Amino acid sequence: MSDTKLTNELMRTFDGHEKISALKCAAKLTEFGEKQNEANEALAYNVNDLIKRVCALEDKQEQTTAVLHKIAAELKDFKKELDRVRLSEKLNSGTIERLNNAIMLSGGDSE
Image (cartoon, one colour):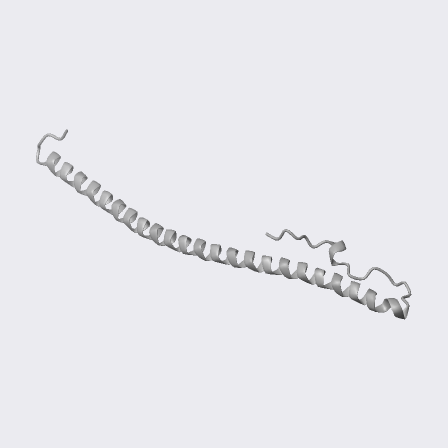
């Protein structure tokens, strides 16, 4: 994360509207240019830091999406297996009940 915080003070490159003599104009222009360069550098540093952070978030999102797709596929397979087990249990329960009824009808003991 960027150590340089963009503040109003840092981004201010022009400080006043005082009248400048022709002799001081070059010095004031140089001062303005230096301040503008500092502001531009700070802004560029923060923008580049934000770009890196966005790229990292995009990478993390792609990884998370891949994991979620894998979990969804595993859940789908689990549901199929659970449905198969439930069906087997119903079929087995029905078979046991029919066998029990057959034993009772034939006069055998059922315990």
